[in-house]
Image (cartoon, rainbow, N blue to C red; front, top):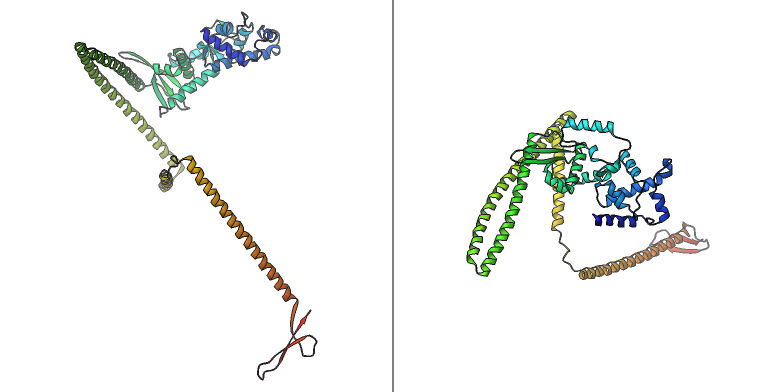
Length: 436
């Protein structure tokens, strides 16, 4: 306990930089007086620090006397305002008492009466310092959510049944488990189970979905007893295995020491242990088989209910069978396409075994090839551009030349250049070219 308090004090010294400042400490440690606005900042400081410590160290249950006398003790000085701080935290719902939570072992009617009476008789300023322990509300909610998340990883149904021992192991202790079970029972996400047969067996049924739990049935109690039986048989197997290992080591030791008589005794014991283990293992397998059948039956029931809901929805929305069949075909085609993609990806060669140096050399070669290709492409673009410009200039030149020429039929005698073309006795035609 002293080491735990020392860790808390070290945490406070790191979180509060001015914790050892005498002037500030005197202001913080004095009792509240006057209007709330005068001590509001001090109250927020203490409230924030208490919740932060509890959250950091995962302290679901904290003792008020420990908070005052151990956590915040500075050379024998304790905060005079801490009684008021805890009372305000209680009134504002930051902390609560175990008595305020629903008792899961009582009946539903008793729980309702207890809840109403707590609301009516709850004092505005309870003596929190007289409580043996109080509960940090924010941490309580987080731990309840962690329990549901932990169980959801190993259970696929909307609810599950576990023994009280396993529930306590998940919660981190019997006290924490009792508080968490009370809180979850109040939220109707968990219910206490008990079976009175040869042994008294306790368990918890927990909702793993957003909905509330249904009422407890005899079937739930039978399932709890089967689960408890598997845990007991598994414990017996563990004990048997340890005994077997000890007897085997003793037999080997006796044999090495030359005491064959004692070694023979241990050998007989090993045979009896082996026979006992086989019987226990066979019984465990039978119980697990029954639990497996129950789980399959529950899954089948869920599937049947889903099919009924689907049929009802089809009727209500007036969907034809052809539409449903077409939708199923589309879904199947999508699944087949996805499987083909996955198969292609699986057949793709793995590059995990290729050395980094080989990859770097291939990458450099690829860079050089890309660089050469870029140069060739650039040169081709330059040549094509030059040829394009040459062709364009030639076209413009020819266009200008023809635009400066005029072709006409004129009679001879006009000044200029006259060219006569004759063919036999045909008429002579004068083509005159004039430069403008």
